[in-house]
Image 1: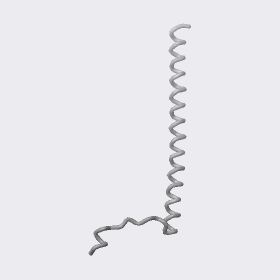
Image 2 (image 1 turned 90 degrees about the horizontal axis):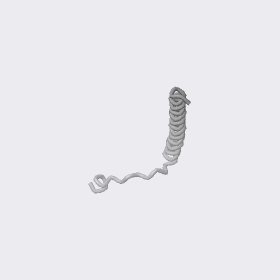
Image 3 (image 1 turned 30 degrees about the vertical axis):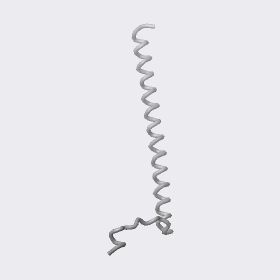
Image 4 (image 1 turned 180 degrees about the vertical axis):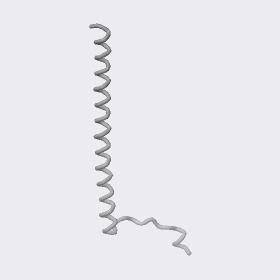
Length: 63
C-alpha cells in the first residue's frame, strides 16, 4: 500500500463519518420537530378544554 492509497482510505473514512453525523443530525432534528408538534398540539387541546392551570397573581388577590 502506497501513500496515495492510505490518503484515499483516510479521505473515504472521513467522508463516511461526515455523512453519518449529518444523518444523525437530520434524524434528531426530525424527532425534535415531531416532539414539538405533539407538544404544541397537546397544549392547544388543553387550552380548548380549559384544563391548563392558572397562575395566581398575588398582587391582584389583595386589592
